Image 1 (cartoon, rainbow, N blue to C red):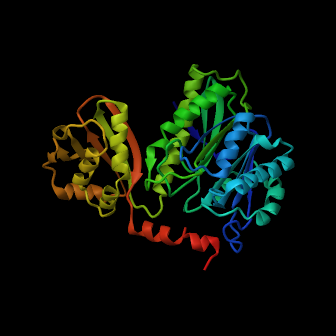
Image 2 (cartoon, rainbow, N blue to C red; image 1 turned 90 degrees about the horizontal axis):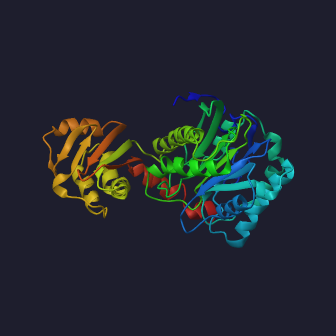
Image 3 (cartoon, rainbow, N blue to C red; image 1 turned 90 degrees about the vertical axis):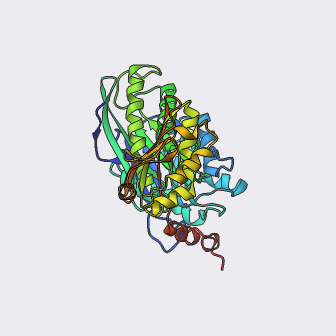
Length: 412
């Protein structure tokens, strides 16, 4: 299926607009935008996926409730503060964000999704956000996609957005999206924040199904540091402005839309790994030959989460011994004497033993900023691919200072 990249990010589909303002949420002296809004002029159907972390931030709980009650038509999001572990006041603050935006747009409160990202455990500075919330709608623009993507950044170093045009059900439709995320990345639903819009005319059932499938093949396939956030949210709004009959679940058009959505989310997921906090390697990890899908997944995730393996990659070290030991504790069904491990197709381990490939060849591959590791278990036909990174000394330095609780709480 062919996709054409277009400009506009999350505002590229017909009828969507976005904007952002600065409220000084994390730092009153910093003028960077930290409060964003995405809005459809037309009614939407909507879908979402959320963190499976049992500790859920207030905006996650509020948005889940809104989705159960109504269809979303707008999303308000802030960076700099996660509004997580903030109790009943945190819930009230999230509701206040939705209520304020709804009032300016002429919507019902439950038509607004709420997202937050940043430091956990601190109350939102609602006194500083009040003016921004009241005037946020005035900054809406059909060209505001990049501003939305920039406003939700925390430790990100690059803006992450994409928009495509594709033929779905014989009609041209657009899908636009933006995301943020560079740390606390090891999802079990999606990860970070991601907002997706489309002008496809699509049924609710098809929309939710395609989002779940696309998330499973994209955001659920990445790992930077092995941590899962309290705020992970992916929201998808479809306003039907491309016209035509509604795309029904199980139809050819539904499959075409799912393929296009998968492409969009996978591009953003890979961008998050490449922009991981102080990472220097982008590693595609393929596990093949597993007896069942779940075993392939267990092996891939055990390797991708291993601090020892990730440290080896940071040191340009093709240490297959650390990989095979992670395979061994993955709880997957394996046979040591059947395991093959290769770097960009060059054998490092064959049958559980050191291969004959010159170590210099393997080191040259591990020294690259992007390479592929393939693990073949030789037990079946199941496979699983995950996108991951190394871990660096700079990652530790960054996280022990930038997100220190005392600093962000303003306590000396």
